[in-house]
Length: 148
Image (cartoon, rainbow, N blue to C red; front, side, top):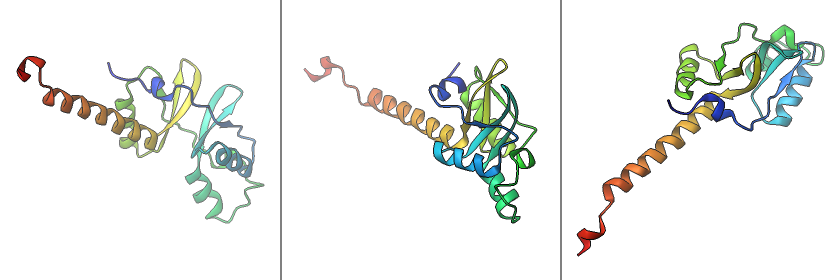
C-alpha cells in the first residue's frame, strides 16, 4: 500500500468551529490559520464543514450579515469523509469524483484534520517528481567497471 491520507496530514493543526459561532468568527479563525475550510464540531463530534466558498456564496453574495449569521445556517451537513488509513490516491479520486475541495479525515471516531485537494495535488506532484528522478538516475547509472 502507498502513503495513507493520515500520513499526508501529519502535524497539521485541526481547525474547527462550533455551529453556534458566527460566520464572521469562523472567517477570522480560518483566515488566521490560513485554511480554506474548518470542521464544525459539537463537542468532539463532526457535524459539518464550512468553507470559504460557503461564506462567499451563502453569506456575502446574498447580502447577509456575517456577524449575525451562524455557521449552522451555512455549513455542509452531509460530509464526505476519509479514513486515516486510506491511501491518499483513493481520497484524491473521491474528491475529484464528488467535486469537493476539502475532505475531513477521521481515525476511529476522532477527526484528525481536513485535507484540501490542492495539498493532495501538490503531494502527488512531489511524489511523481521523486519517482521521475529515481528513474532518471537509474537510466543514467554507469557501473564503475564500464569506465575501464
